[in-house]
Amino acid sequence: AHVSAARYGKDNVRVLKTDRDAATGIHTVTEMTVSCLLEGDIDVSYTKGDNSVVVATDSIKNTIFITAKLNPVNPPELFAAILGSHFIDTYSHIHAANVKVITHRWTRMEVRGKPHPHSFLRDGQETRNVEARISRKGGIVINSGIEGLTVLKSTGSAFHGFVRDEYTTLGETWDRILSTDVDATWKWKTFADVAAVREAVPKFNPAWEQAREITLTRFAEDESASVQNTMYKMCEQILGAVPETELVTYSLPNKHFFELDLSWHKGIKNTGKDAEVYVPQSNPNGLIKCEVARG
Ligand SMILES: O=c1[nH]c(=O)c2nn[nH]c2[nH]1
Image (tube, rainbow, N blue to C red; front, side):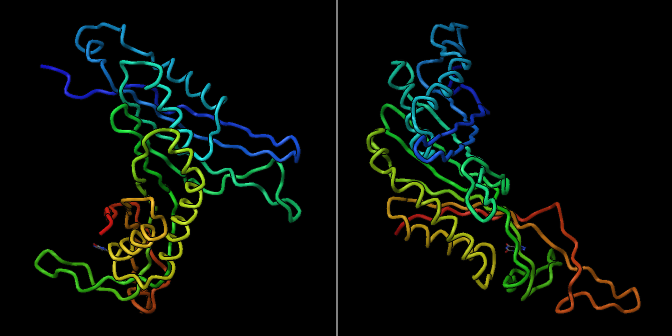
């Protein structure tokens, strides 16, 4: 037997960084959860118990905090690239770093009608994510994303014309509630090194803003024929809006809200066009995934 693949490191490293503008007194906070897993000539630590090749996960954790102190943590794409490159540059036997940066929402408070200089609120569990693979041979591959953005629309969603056979009980609908937790990613064209990522810095925040805006707008405005068709339109539009991306993915649970027949009680009409009271379903849920490439 032999090690066919291995990576190790520290997961769930929580970091909060404050950036204070001395001139304006305006503070910005960034909270992230970082994972950093290393690959390289480390097999003997698995096969022989030889720890001479192991950069301890505790040291990886320390490096994450030091890197956050000495470098910008925004955009997260740049921080991930800097962090991963540190390990390739510092340890000749480490050949790849897999960095995931999950940034949590601290939205600046509006107080007395004005943005507050140092107060923030957690407006949702939505996160902005970056997964970067920094490797000696393959450069820096970055996937940016949005996760946990929960949305619902109370009409503008249909689902009909699907396979009907001896397994089908689902009725066709031209008007249903649609709800999902958005998990979207966009893959950047490979960057040669950190310098190339620095050059692209002005593109990362606008790309996230556009991807989020496209997602919300298409979700709201599309007369959805299915989750599949609506998510494809989102992918197409993101590819069009962000030329430096080569691939977009969505993974959308279909969080069902069932109509409830109440006709047994005095003939109450509560289905179809009369549906008002629904039963939210925790499970099972549909799960619709796609990856859309250029061309
Ligand atoms: O949008 C939908 N796509 C599907 O594939 C599906 N299956 N059941 N309901 C569904 N809704």
